[in-house]
Image (tube, rainbow, N blue to C red; front, side):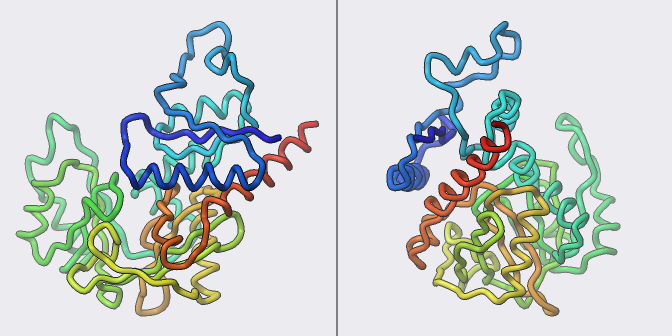
Length: 301
């Protein structure tokens, strides 16, 4: 029997996260996999120990790890022990920082809204002036979207209608790490979430809001199942591959000349997709991980 870990964050607990954990455990049972839930606080990185794998004892080394957290250094450490980790520490890091996501998409030639990064500053300094907004405005017209580089569920995302809005958003943001993007008016309050697993799209849903420019369910949006076009499917797979993800939730906007990638989420919550379409993403991911782990073991033997 194949054994695996599902690594979760010890300090981020909610019914929504518990639901996903339960879906993974149920899928593992159906596929005859022994899956153990591990909190990141259960396996601290100890790079000074004489025995590199001492923290794994007394249990056996897992065949794989599904890393459902953003503790990137722990994921990287597990990889150094020769354990296959899905998603990889690199891909989680790229998806966690929206700037890195868009750099990866740009390098791969993937269509996305025009995007400008805020200049790097220091926490104890911040932005004494916002003169760089002059350059941002030359690249993007108002309204423009402003996002914190680190954020989830549509939070830390704002629509600035003019210079005053932009300045207030920057001053009130919890981070100086921001991106500015062209507003895709044709996609106001609507987008598509496609769940990519390996080289195929397992399922998709259409998300929409009648009261918000964001379509996120957690921001009050609604959803229904969606049959993506071949163009949308290929774009979502390309985007997931560009950031190195084995599986990902890819959000597409309705651009005037075709779909454009808004975000790529390495640990996309998939309960809403299950609710509206019946697609069991946990089982899709588990099947993929079993297949890929088996191939890696075969190559090593």
